[in-house]
Image 1 (cartoon, rainbow, N blue to C red):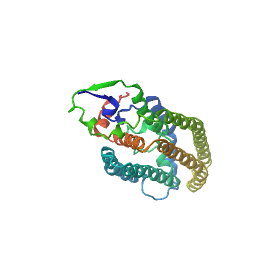
Image 2 (cartoon, rainbow, N blue to C red):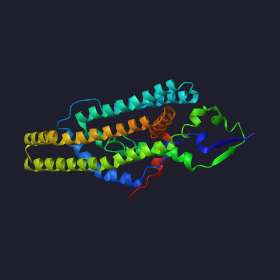
Image 3 (cartoon, rainbow, N blue to C red):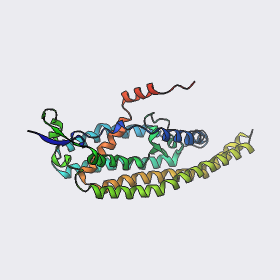
Length: 304
């Protein structure tokens, strides 16, 4: 007996294998590193004492990896009830919403630690835009599920022992991407159209805010050279005024990220949403794979 299956149905996409684009990494490094260092240095003049965001992120990540993701996978494997699966989808969605709310709150206290976070590892940094994941990553991940179904040729599975993973999956999970794909692709294009309109304006606002910040600080520093109290006073005043716009840009970028995520979950059915969130969570977990990190460190080119 033969079973007709596709490669995409036999296993989920390994999202951690996506290679970071080199040009994006260079651009982020060049445009953000110098400004971020200045923000952190200047912020020492007026920073309020608070828990480093790294501590919160580690706790948030551990909950995602060790609690929410395993529960979602268990629900996907059994899928006895779409209501139960929907509960786990909502839990992960709320987890991401809580994360971006926490980012917004941390930014109002000290946006410098978030714009170019030193605590992000070498695998994460190429995917960052204004301090966190680029919103295009969400739509590209969703497109990857749809393109798999369209491009891969069917294969014949004759060994049931080899295809046990395929056979163990509920039928409605295996067929999640078989219906409504055209409507979903249309919705993705609409979301990306909004991104093409909003991203340039956010980038422009960020650059303008950075430029004004640097100009203001440099001007006050030069006029107050040798006068410690005047330096602190001038820098504190400039920081309060110019940082407000930087915080606004950062918060708007976060609102855009969560808006894209919410739009995707609204456009998908519960099974598609579950598979998408599983892929997104696994993508983030892959950043912390110690084997990948060691291989990445070994591949770095030493510049003499």
